[in-house]
Length: 241
Image 1 (cartoon, one colour):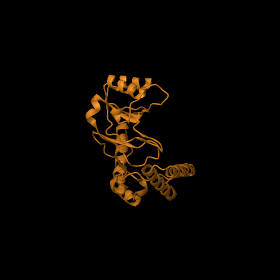
Image 2: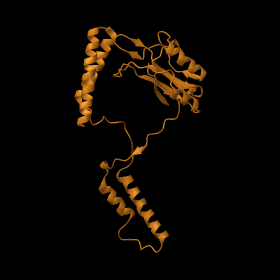
Image 3: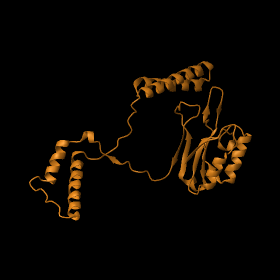
Image 4: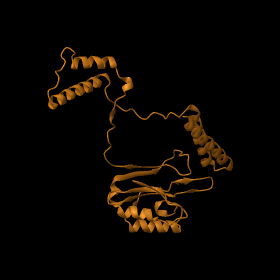
């Protein structure tokens, strides 16, 4: 998977993108801001940059994953499909349900979502030692390593390794009893997150929806103001944290 940005004042595609596509033999998913118009990925018209990128897509045997013509880029005066998701032929059967999300992204560009088929790795079990029952841990060690049966001094390396394995094994069993591993229940909010930011974020989304629905100058100015305030709050809170 790779992300691309094709600046409007640079050639399309860039040498970097050409090299990446030419050298990749595995399944490739390439997405990003192309700054190019072409009706095949949902743009309202075709331009020279779009034709150049489209010819590269054909010659490289890439597949366009875009579906529909929902704008991926929205400003006060413009709505257009500028973002393209490209996949190699051997990845075509793996990628599906491509769509532009309605959720506000706090950017001129909207979120794009698609699914990639494959096995989902199981989340690893983790142990939080702050929740350990150390009384139970000591009782477990007392049972596994009774003090009235102290081991003899090892006579050779083999006996020493056996004692080390026996001791560490007992510690592992005791901690499994005192603090068992559990499935992680999801990500907690970052330490810099607070109620003021939550309200500002909510307000920003509200003003954006109003601006896109009405298209009025006043609503877009209000949205820009709330967006600046939200980003200012984020920076300040992160620095403080």
